Length: 253
Image (cartoon, rainbow, N blue to C red; front, side):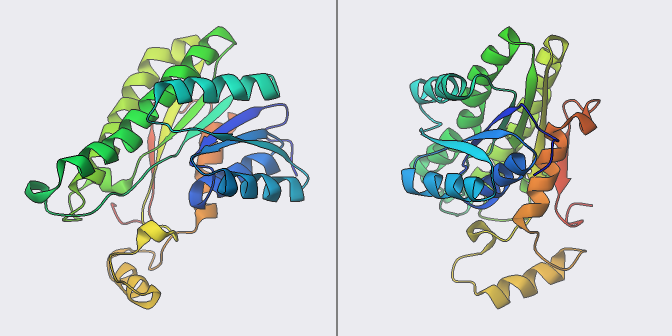
């Protein structure tokens, strides 16, 4: 454990697995108390157990980020349990069923935007409300490198939802930095999570595909994304405002 986030309370949506879980662990290793949020009590409890096994402190908050009342409760519960909210990583997201843009089912489009974009907006809404009243804070939103390009046919809903997060981040950053709320985003590329696979793809096929298109020649690891989020959330990045940090091994270079 280190003192990088000592005395801080961090909230991580989508904290039950993958990048969210790894980032929650990274915050805890830095000394933060971490509230992990998601729809599955079991997954959240497992994250908290991992945090506590390393000597950290955390709690689970079951919430649906597409529901305003859940998000308001998510923030209120975190503050009530832990005495404040200083850092938020708005990471909850879904990929949705892929398909050509004109053939996408409207329900798929709506579901992807509800979680990936509206979920981030609602999370910021209530996080900012608290932070403005209590001396500021830091927010990192989860976007994606796919929001910068159209090179993934069939992923239009996901790409559009993440591109929206990127511009929302920049707008909100300008709106609230004068009040001490510093907002940025992280845009991972292909990372070693279930979402990095295409339908029916084996690990060997995925890795070969990635080697052919990503300059670094491999998928990213969740710890590498967590490290970027932790830097954006720390005082080391205190002059970074409204930035969307691409972490993708050079894929969009």
